[in-house]
Length: 317
Length: 298
Image (cartoon, rainbow over all chains, first blue to last red; front, side, top):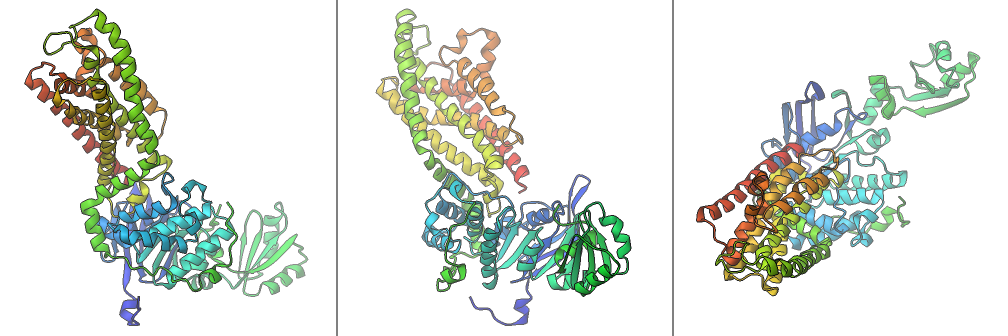
């Protein structure tokens, strides 16, 4: 696979959405969102549960009809050319739907058959993907004997059986332990290096920061902000954040005495956040005012702060 | 949920070629093949899954006829034949052995039972419990192809079951007419006529509140008992004969009797049996496709 360095090819749009709307009765799960994903980009939809991320993914995947708006994947309308669009995609759903009545390797082969692929190719491809997913020694195992992380990797391996140029990942690491998540991120990163376009939803800010070149922050079916993780943080937050805990009873009463320190103040039930470019300096000022928090922590701003700023709520409840 | 301890990933894979195989079809070619053969692809998956419980399938297909034939055909038949003689509607008016009378009904029942088994829990499982429909749903396959593929798989199991059953009937000398082998297919048709509407019903169920157990108790069992299975429908009171007329099992059984021992009935009635079963199957098929498409979104 050779990548020509012609700018036009690099900026080729593979997914384009315009004023996409999905309504269930009166409720708009997706309420007029527009975005473009160029080939090879890793594009994220970040938002809390119920923000409309999965619905958007299902529309891209051609398994949910939009109420209005335009959508094109590889220049094709998923509603008119469903099988063609889906033949371009690899899909990793939020809930694993592996067939636990057949063996691990057979899950890959059976899935490849849906794409009309011949057994001569699938036998080798299945072995290669098992290697990629670090499941070679589980090839003949039953699916229910796999751990959560292994099942997730098998689902990803399955989604690659047709060598898709676009991979849709809906909450790829939700419910996994930290080690399993890091293995998955590594696999996804490798795919990205190979030029696969990744579109993923997540409500984990660290996942978005790790994997996404660019993302949209979605809430209640609308786009709140768009940009790279760094640019979003720069635009909507300060460089550092000072987290103070005064004890759950006192946080809100103390907040009034912190006015004027840093650029912005957020009072959460369990802590007070002071947004400042120099966290340590802000902490000095707090102490100077005779206030003594139970704990204090200076950290860099994250997408969590961006989300908090945009919506007044946390990403993960 | 522990991951196996391994050398670090980057070391382990540093030299391994990563996904070097090239896919032999373009997405357009894949989609074209899926549009044409998608139903068969899903049937392939279905059969592969069935292989996992293949032993059960074969044991059921072999064991059921043996048990029924010994119980009804040999045990009960001895008693009935000694007492009733020709009252069972034999073609010639001579004493029709009870075994011969009941054999087509047992075969037809086997078809209904397989259909009841394959089109209830496994449908619910695809949508809800194991969510296995959502994998192919994200592939180029359409929902209608899932219905078709599933039905092809069920048809295969039906033919396997009725074929084996037929062999046992032969072994017990229960099929006098050489045309009797056609029962393999009429019993399978009966299975589809019952199975496809049941599949449509099963695909409309979102919450399992024991509906399938109710189907078993209040649909399958009454059909089994009141479809002219063990005694001619005509010998039952009028008030319950309607159960036989709407029952795919009765139509399937009567067809079998015509083929197996030349049971005399007007030709139009034989045609009506075939037509009724075909219409039921077709209606179920259309409704199942509609339900699957609604539920899976495409």
